[in-house]
Amino acid sequence: MLDGLLTFFASHHAIRAEKTLRETGFDAKLIAGPKELSPNCGTAVRFEYDRRDEAMPLLAARHVEVEAVHRYAPRTDAWRASR
Amino acid sequence: MTIYFDHAATSWPKPPGVRAALDRYFEEAGGNPGRSGHRMSIAAAQAVEDTRDLLAELLATPDPSRIAFTKNATEALNIAIYGSLRPGDHAVTTGIEHNSVMRPLRHLESLGLELTVVPTAPDGTLEAARIAAPIRPETRLVATVHGSNVMGSLLPIDEIARICRDRGVPYLVDASQTAGAVPIDVEALGVDLLAFTGHKALLGMTGTGGLYVRPGLAIEPLLRGGTGSRSDQETQPDFMPDAHESGTLNVAGIVGLGAGVRHLLATGVYEIEVHERQLTARFVDGAGGIPGVTVYAPADAKQRCGVVSFNVDMLSPSEVGTILDRDFGIMSRVGLHCSPGAHRTIGTFPTGTVRFGFGLSNTLAEVDTALDAIAEIAAWSAAPHA
Image 1 (cartoon, each protein chain N blue to C red):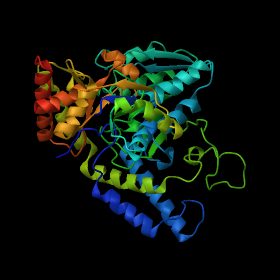
Image 2 (image 1 turned 90 degrees about the vertical axis):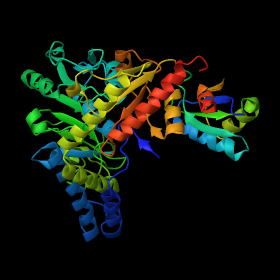
Image 3 (image 1 turned 60 degrees about the vertical axis):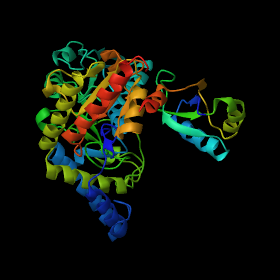
């Protein structure tokens, strides 16, 4: 379940984070970064929040700099379910 | 189906001639312009100068050498700002500038520049006289945007240019959103410096842009290096465009840009302006009537370019942008658009807005489709379950 969100200072890191997570067996998805969580970067990565302790060392090992980890369930999912 | 309303970030699709020109260039030219003198080098130099000629026609300057190629508008603005100002000088700008203007100015301010930031009206429009008031003997530059990249307001660059000319202060125009979308005659306007990007309304590729420098005005280069000219000397040439074109140019990009400009000159910039103004008016009038939607654009249609912002009550810009993309195939840009001052002006800082940037390829039917989508989203947002 994509109930977590990683935000970044630069989209360069967001793109690499998603690539790293996918390559290492995570479910991950690039999205437009919610500005209410981070003004810094236009791109964020949705991922599995329960696996955050597993994900963070992997990202650090690839020199991916994460701004913050959030629990995040966008209301846009509810929009989709309503249609 | 894709509805591309992000021309303010970069135009899409490019005219077919852009790809064809690149194919020709890679097959036939391919050398380094102005460096080697063999036929392939000469062909590349000719291609670069063809694009420069087309840009001169577009901007109505009789001397193409007054246009230097850069990698984007940001580089052109940096050349103009750092080339004009020193610590201790005074500069005037507006409260709705893009960070490509504000960050260099704020950096220079930290080194001792005195900076006056003139606020615009809440809709991003500006009375030119407000620029005149802070000008003083130490003022070395007035820098303003032409068309806002957030709410699409057009500033009166003709009147501001007149004020600057009367006061003997160079005037820099950031035409990132307007070059190719709004007719610009640099000589008639009397602007001193004008920065443009190649990949928006000029229909060329990313990695291209340029700076117009008025005849008689010399500014310090930002970069120094090889130009293929005066190679016997270890000092930078002081003539245009070489003064500001050190290092090998992005020839492929410039070739593509030439094809883009050729296409828009054939279409007519005035016709493009009318087209985009119609699209914007349809959107502003339509969205303004949807309950729960706030539109940010000048009330006067003549003071708008093809850029407009909006928000939907109780939804963040990124939520609206996500739904528009995922469920309706409509491309927008959400957030602060690198222009925090513009968002403070319209009261949308720090969450920002959803921005549509209309372009040549868009139609009124696409605007109507987007209005229906936004009405549906706004109705859902207002319903108790949302």
